[in-house]
Image (cartoon, rainbow, N blue to C red; front, side, top):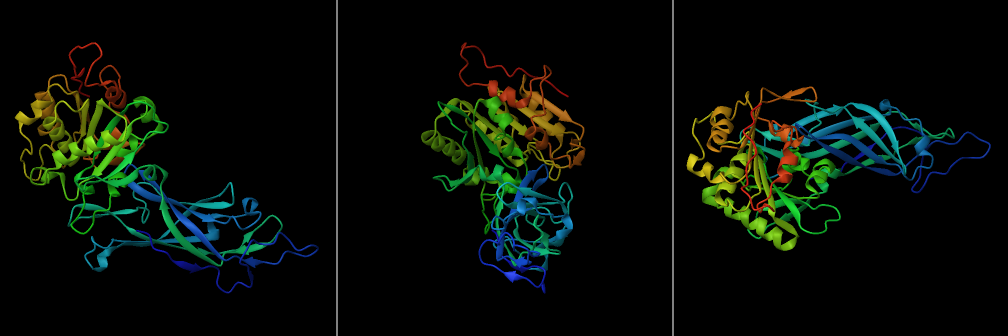
Length: 436
């Protein structure tokens, strides 16, 4: 995925190149300026509500004594970013360059141990910040080949007065702790997936199956097992400390479909997903009474289909903007006879009324009416932290545990309370019917 590039810094500076650590001072004289060898840097990724962005770059300056007390300002460095469509998804045209822009450095921080972090302008709509691009002709998000270059515009002045210039910069990998916490594996049926395992797991733990939307599926030449975690916070939300505390430590699995969940019938994806759950259950201590499935858009449709196909498997089914019906065709992608098979499975539908992809009345409202006692949460728009997103993106609310029942129980807590085998032997009620 990554490319390496060496970039000269402050060309023409008169300085002494050193291969090892920089000497601390010259007694009795002004310290002579020095030039380091090659300095490596990482791209620091953060998955925001609209997808992953490179929010900073971290320079490894551990071989520069005194760097932690150095005077460094945002103007010391210029950062440039280029993003290219990867091989396998490329059309071979100029449009394969998604962006080639300068990234504004907003803040510089020195970290313990001698690393320096350059914060970059980021957030919804920030140009050149994304690690992904959406291929409109193929309807897919892909992880870009990122090539970052750094130029040093002025020396770094240490506390002892010595000026330091970096000889060259070398890009290393994309680092995103939340994404990297998920291991990358392939099932026995060839289904790629990412798995989060709870820390210090003892005893049987619940499992949350996250099914991504259509934009995160693979392509004939591109099946990377990356975008289902990076395109939104759907899966990552369940691995946060808050969710893990609520669930008492849960496994989270996020499979990536090789093409599209809409091919479930011909490709046997329902059976392959059930086989994946069985495979994980043989490998880890998973509580068979607390297996949950959640999904967004096409993944929401797949979650309903999976719950209907295996009605004794799931403790709950939760969907956001489930693609049960599409505006572009006007057709139902699932029948009422299939939906009602969830009658004994606690189910929650989440959607925004301004969804321009999936009509909320013919999807979430329709399915909710077929399942008395199911939960339904409707929003007017998708707005979070002051930003308004496309109306189809109601999975943002699920990723932040925002939907709540009429009694104020939020969706993660509600899921955690569901169990295929109630201790009292009573009926497994949905406890819902809420609209908001």
